[in-house]
Length: 422
Image (tube, rainbow, N blue to C red; front, side, top):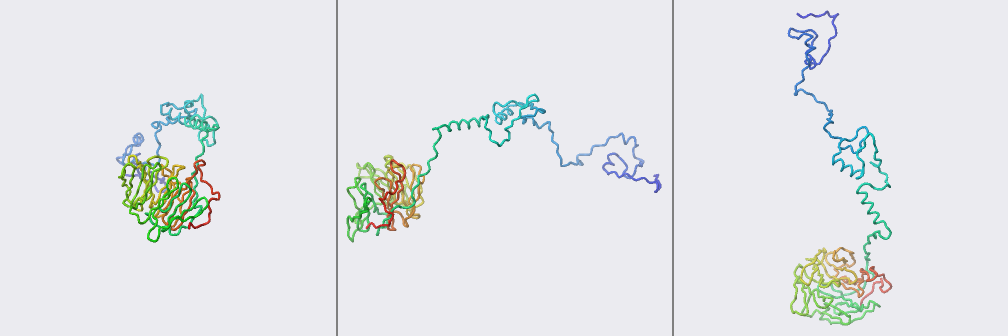
């Protein structure tokens, strides 16, 4: 039987969560005990049971165990209240890299000297202590002395981008297989125009008509002798036609290129070519012997090839090859510096100056409206003349002199006005 107090004398019930009630084994309804309820003294003496793992509730806060973290390994500059207790090789190495090899061990309560340079942005004028700072300071001391400082990098040589003289050349043919321009050692330019050959003096701009082959013939090539006293003329009625033909500077070897894509090298002791080079994939018109290295030959291929190749004629090996991106029409070395110039046709009609042997571009010149088929160099090696089917001859000052190594300035010899060659 359950006893209940009158409503007027009822006391307020204590609301206890069911889980707590289960843990304390309390009656969730009231303080009354049923037939199977333990006595109050037993309930108070019995400790609460631990909940099963399946009912464990976790919160979002995690407190790590500091005893297993070994944070003392990073106490390189410890405070006096918590000195570092681990002096392992790793700690010593890290301390030496950060604070120098002579840095003291972690400070103790008796001797604390905090490093004031740590995280300091202001420049420190004191002597460096780390190995990297010492090396930088030593390098600075070696290069800061008077007379020992390295000279600044030499700026690239400036090449004028426009011709300083232009000559009208009527009837200058746009034919890849012709060689109609040559400059003699006596400063006279020979030009083949149609059936005639004209001579133009670079010293006084005087034009002379050398010969006329008549209506049934035409000029295919002109070439001066080394001393400039004789001029050879190739005509359209000849039996032999080659794209390019050049003697070496010692007159011992002759290089010829043809539309069979071959480059042949001849000498005075044989009636057959001593070298037959077949790497080009188009007609070989551009041929030039280096004045700086014996046996070094440069050649250029046509539209299907577009490459400049360098050969060692002593063994026939290819030394280098570079794709220029367009038809190679002509090549010429500079005798003053180890550079060469190439003229091009399809599709850019440009003139390019190269540094050998790196083959880095010194300059790219444009102005001709058709492929630049003709090229010749002045006797002093500083000026080149280019010709194209646009019926113009253009003079470019691109190479330095032997002494000054800088481009020569115009001193009145050339006129910027456009003139005619005939």
